[in-house]
Each structure stands twice: as structure tokens, then as C-alpha cells.
Amino acid sequence: MGDLRDLLSDTLAALNAATGELLWRFKRPIPEDMLQLHPTSRGVGLWGDKVYFAATDAVLVALDAKTGKEVWSSKVEDYAKKTRPSNVSLDEMRAVWETNVFGVLAVYQAMLPLLRETKGARIVNVSSGVGSLSRNSDPAFPYRTIFGPVYPASKTALNALTLAMAIELEGAGIPVNAVSPGMVRTGMTEPVYRDPKLAAERDGLVPVGRVATPEDIADVIAFLLGPDARYVNGHDLVVDGGITAAYVTPEG
Image (cartoon, rainbow, N blue to C red):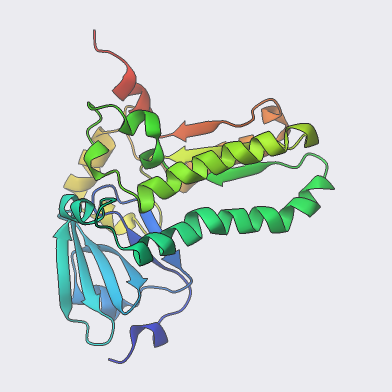
């Protein structure tokens, strides 16, 4: 079928198979014929000469971009074991950090001169709860075993970068904050929720009773960008429907 990179355009993304969270994204769509190659997939992401699918049974699957044949598969837990600090691919780590950390910094540096001249300027970075050091430092946190130096640590670094930006701009009157969404129903994660049982399970994990919509997150970002949030600065605002609050609140 030829090189997949020649067939795609618009948006192409890879999802975390356990959480449905976006891992990386490119400006390419997912052609229907590629989804049919692995019909249980949640999403797809181009990575070098391979295409990674995140399957509904929490298995990451890689297909060769030229042949479409499966070349590798692994449960998320197994993938985490292969991306420990002692054995992680430096190329893979650099690629993710290039987007999630250095890409953010590059945009910041390019736009800052304009922001300094703009009245009411605000900065909001989109982070993730998987990057929280406080939660992942807690032995009782159920997902701490998948914390690693690739995607999770890139969001940890983004949180630190957000604070550094906030400190730098304190005297300039430009608040800098981060938003950490929980599970969100987007165009890319929607295949996850086509399974009624899985969708109900996901909704059941959220204290408010449902997974977030993009509008739920966008409204919070709009708040932080608006005048009502003028006194909020250097903050990571978790928007997960109460999952974090339920986790840290003792029962009884």
C-alpha cells in the first residue's frame, strides 16, 4: 500500500491505551482503511517507520508503515517496563519532549514580545495529571507504576516550565497557569466510547458521573485566559471531574 506517510494528511495521533489520553499528534488524518487493519484500535500514531495502534484491551500495537503487518504489541504495563530510565530509548524520549516541552518553550519565546505589548495577556499550558509528582510519589496511587521518563515526565517538566514562566513574568503582569485534564471525549478518543460497556466503566470512574467533553476543558481554559482569573498565577488546575479529589479524600 506504499509508505503510510504519503497517504495521510491533517491530524494523526496516538493514544494511551489505558487512559485514552492523547500521547502525540501529527497533522494527518486516520484513513479508514488503516483503521480496518486493526479494527479494535482506539487511535493511531506515526512513529518513525511504524504506526502505533492503541487497542481496546489496553494493548499497544505497532504496524509497519509500508506493509501494514503487525511488528510489535505490548500491554501498557509492559510498555512502561520498557521505558524505564534504565532502558528507555533516548530517541523516543527526545521526540516526545521535543513537542511537549521544547515546543512549548519555543512558542513561548516567539510570542512573548507580542504578549508583553498586549493588555490582559495570559498564558495557559495544557498539561496532564499523569505528570503530577505529588500523586506519583504516593505509593498508594494506582497508576504510579506506569510513570516514566517519556510522556508522564514530559508533563512533569511542562509543569515546572509553567512555574518558571510564571516567576519570570510576575513583574510583567502576565499570569501563567496550566490545566491538567482528566479523561476527555474527543474526536480522537471517541472510538473508545463506542463500546457501551467501556464507556459506562469510564463514566463510573468520575465522581460527577461522566467523562469530560472538550467544552468542559475549553471553558476552564477560557476562564484562566479571562479577567476573572486575574489573581490566579503559577497554578496547575486539575480538571478531572473530581477524580483527584476522590483519590486524596479519606473515606468515612
